[in-house]
Length: 122
Image (cartoon, rainbow, N blue to C red; front, side, top):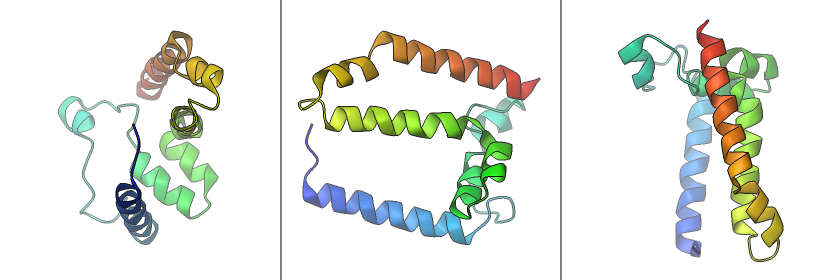
């Protein structure tokens, strides 16, 4: 899958707009951010609950706030970025790509997500 320059430009513009919005407005106070559907339906925190507030904290350099709102981001974002990079570089580093997309990594991510979900709801 190749991403042409137009699509990449659109992705970059949307990313910058979202960063500006999340930097400018605090999801804890602003009423226009969407609530978590899982939390709304079940009353339990999903693995992503608090991500919007954690992103706002991260953009303001508040790492304690990031961990408070959603500590999973500290593990999840680097993992997702590494998997994304392995896909972008799959032809140059095929062994790294195979490892990052292996059943072991997928299972490990799933187990961490399940444990995180249980832990944060205790």
